[in-house]
Image 1 (cartoon, helix red, strand yellow):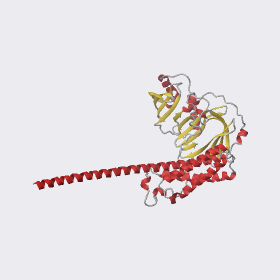
Image 2 (cartoon, helix red, strand yellow):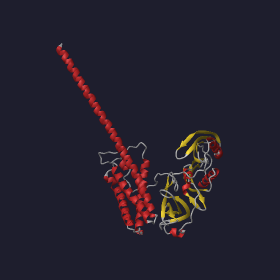
Image 3 (cartoon, rainbow, N blue to C red):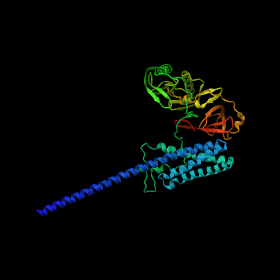
Image 4 (cartoon, rainbow, N blue to C red):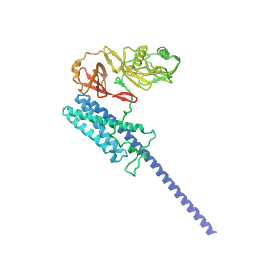
Length: 448
């Protein structure tokens, strides 16, 4: 019996040990699997971040090279081409992170390094006060065409990827990174139709200059008075019900309303100071039988501004994306555009409904200004414009300075190849103070 008892104890002991070992091994295996999944997720995130940053770098390179060609101001050229060089360095770093075989990326690296090296050499000359020669401008034009091909290739490839695409699952690390992911970037020099997917916007659309709000009427309104403003000013929507939903206490203190209308619902913000209509968002709009032109949308936008008792507003930028027409309004007084006082309007071209109204810039910046006469003539200002550009139109414009204050400028609308530029020359110093380029996209026009 003693022997049997000892045998049983031995079997139990061995079983306990084996069970402990199995549990330990399972724990180790689980830890390995968990860590492996974690590392894979981190690696995937690193690859995706590098890919998206690479696309952004290349988009910026193309845009800035075209800007450099369109200006004759040394300081502006130096600033722009320095950005090009910085973006080529970042692009090379991001490209190096991606799991791509060197045989598939050597040409890409060469292009980026060539652009970076050449622009750096020009920056060195500009630092010495040496102007760009016609030969250098021709070379930059060629580099622009090359960078534009990169933009087409990369943005088209990125748009073709599914939302749930995982780079790490499309790479064969045993075969020199030869994979479906690599295959999409093999023909980097090929020309394709397409443009980078960006957003629409107009000149100085984000020019909220002042920390202090100066654009609102004096005095405060009550909730009841704000409700009356909604009822009266938005009667064109066919209001059926107004529901006050509370206050907002951000930069602007506003009364917020949900409004039920005949063909849509609205979210409206009325400022407590002055009872100003700060924003309108319409949703649930019904399809209509109209097909408004951009000119008709501009008229509709200016009419709404008049109903809201905002004077002298004119359309200074218009862009269409699908069924929405975007109109940027600004005051135009005595032939001078006041860009800091911009109001953005969205109009459904088929229903004719104003689906968006955003007047933050106007409410922040609008004030009565005393505009001095230009100290330099437009003939003198013309000398600053690059000979590569063809001037289409010129007008006076108040624009925001980079950090604080405003410039009175000559605004030049120009063309080079198929591109449109807005060039701004200070009417006091005669210096070029801003240059913007219109980028046509599948979602409208962007000006940057």
